[in-house]
Amino acid sequence: MRTASRFVIVILFLGLVLGGIFGYKIYQFGQMEKQLSQPQPPARISVTEASTESWQPSIKAVGSVEAINGIEVANELPGVVETVNFESGDTVAKGDVLIRLDSAIDEAALRTRRAEAQLAAQEFKRISDLLPKKAVSQAQYDEAKANYDAARARVNEAEAQLNKKVIRAPFDGTLGIRMVDQGEYIATGTPIVEINMLDPIYVDYTLSEKALPEVDKGYPVTVTG
Image (cartoon, rainbow, N blue to C red; front, side):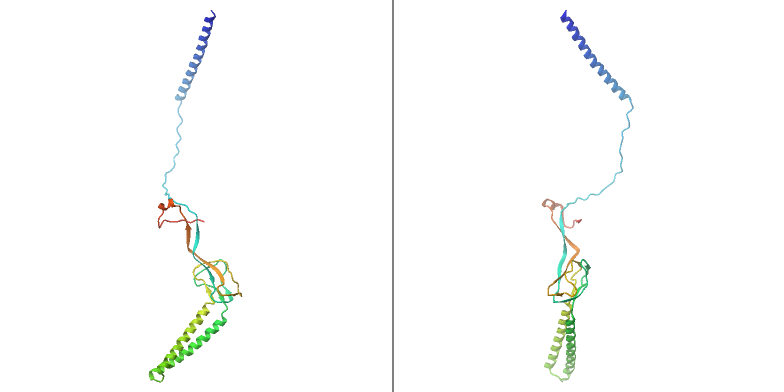
């Protein structure tokens, strides 16, 4: 009798469990049918206008810039600075006067040489006019011509000496710091100012070996600071 009671209890327990599971499944199916019967909201679609863009592959590298020409301007002759015609950082053109050295003695020497040359020219002309008349010898003519040529050479030398008292920019460029002052005596070869030609300019950079097949002569280079 006790065994039959336990069996009945087990049967009832299993029935309750199976009934609960079956009822839950029926509830799920009902919810699914309810959801399917409701209208679905419209799908959202994002639209944008299509456009064409050009993309240029590039290789980045780090480098430095160097002036195509860069020198330190100096004087060839000693002297006292008479005038300074520039300021630090100025941009100058080829031939612009940077400084003038005192040239009073050189100007006096040039006037003397020109006077000597004028006298030699007159003497040479006189001898030249007399030579066809046989009034002077060929030796006198040759001597007069040599004296005239020598006088002209001395004038050219004095002019060159005077021109060296004016220091000019050797090319277009940008000046650095001024290193001389007005009234200062400067010996031969004294640094006056540094000048650099910045247009055009060199850009020095390196690329890795693996990038070399991707570049060729004529490819554009963009430099940013």
